[in-house]
Amino acid sequence: MAAVMITFLFQFLFFVDCYAKYDPTWKSIDSRPIPSWYDESKLGIFVHWGVFSVPSYSSEWFWENWQHQKLPGIEEFMRENYKPDFTYQDFAKDFSAEFFIADQWADIFNSSGARYLVFVSKHHEGYSNYASRYSFGWNSMDVGPKRDIIGELAESIKERTNMHFGLYHSQYEWFNPLFLKDKATNLTTDDFVKFKTLPEWYEITNRYLPEILWSDGDWEGTDEYWKAKEFIAWLYNDSPVKDTIVINDRWGNGIGCKHGGFFTCGDRFNPGHLINHKWENAMTLDKYSWGYRRNARLSDYLTMDQLIETFVKTVSCGGNMLLNVGPRHDGIIDPLMQDKLAKLGQYTNRITEDQNIVYAISLSWPRNNSLYLHSPFPSKQTTVVSLLGYQHKLSWAPAVGQGMIISLPSLAPSELPCQWAWVFQLEGLIQKQRKEPMRMPKFNKYNSSTSHTTINPMVKVTQKNRKERQMESIMCAFRNSMSVPQGSAAVRRNSSSAPTVSTPVTIVTMARKRMTPPTVVLFRRESG
Image 1 (tube, helix red, strand yellow):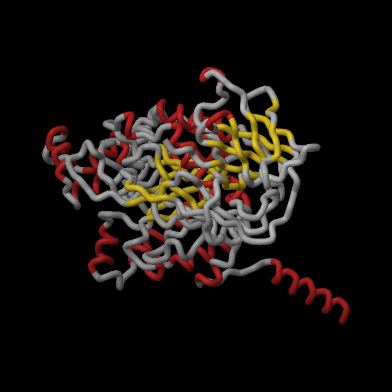
Image 2 (tube, rainbow, N blue to C red):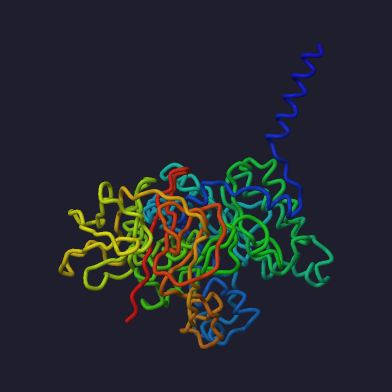
């Protein structure tokens, strides 16, 4: 009997030790590792679709900017195109989705090379893209398409692709009476959270089994008001997706960039250097809006050069890029967006998953057909260099001191194997362990008109643009990198960033399979 009791006690203690329970405190919540699939994915697709897709003017903040901010350009748009008593709710009946075919969407998103999808279940307007029990009369089953948009899309993504399915969900709603009542009491009451926000979180988690929950609209209240820690503790401990779920950092005023899962720290975020936490750059093809705009100009969209550059810069500093598209109200994804997604896939799908391969990426064709790589340790016996898309091997020679010099062929413009960035494949490099942290210079800063606070230039309102980071050379570093000598810049997971010095090379991880990460070496764009 004693032996049985000892065995039982051992099994019980083993079970408790293996099954970590997370308390509703940020210290406990932050101790949970982010599931590896997210770090390995690198690229995701964001989809903003809702009633705002019907007016498709200015941005997805149309209702707020019309009724509350009273922006002159939007007020003029409504006066010129709609009857005086027209309400925002009147737009919902025209959210038709007649051309929404979930299988087609899944194929379009999959063509980009993305490994996860984040779909807007409910934006700040409060309209839910599913039959919510807590949004009666203001959801996609009761008014508009009369369809379970999320259910159809989730099924197609999971059946037709290897992408992970996730949901964006807004915590607050601009004009919900319950929220306005709480707000009137300075949030000393929490009826909106108890009877709307929290029930919806549990509803979408249990019904659709998302592997990402992307919270937003949190800035109006604290994490205490939103009861965020209690919900996340349930999510990590007892939810049906507890083993694979990933969350962001938007769980209350002051929480962003401090607590939660991966950091977003604001839209279009890039720290410009390595940080000791996984982060995401949520950004848009349309520089001025997350939702579809009928009056968008060609120049309002990112070019392929800009898109590829943003992706490479993001990954080089340890982040994922979440690229947003906004479908039309009828369910059509604009062909221009489809084309850019497909071309992005042509680029990302060229990178193979082999731990013995290093990739050097140049954002411009090297001058004089000669490419100097400072970081790699080449071997005359084993190192082979090739240019993806070019059928012949490239010759190279050791550089004086360290590194290598690659000789490039003289090619006519029509013979260049890539339009946006050139990828050099290095095989058979010597593996060496670094002894000191890597160093890298900071990004340069510049004024940008791509901030989410910028108003559509077609609307007669101006707003001061935020400053965003740009770099002519991308320099990020992790400690203990392989295949990189002292003084160069490198990226490896599970290490810390380091002080900055000038160097022309960055090495970034592009692995999608755990324990077998290839490396990417990225050279700076030549000025002029």
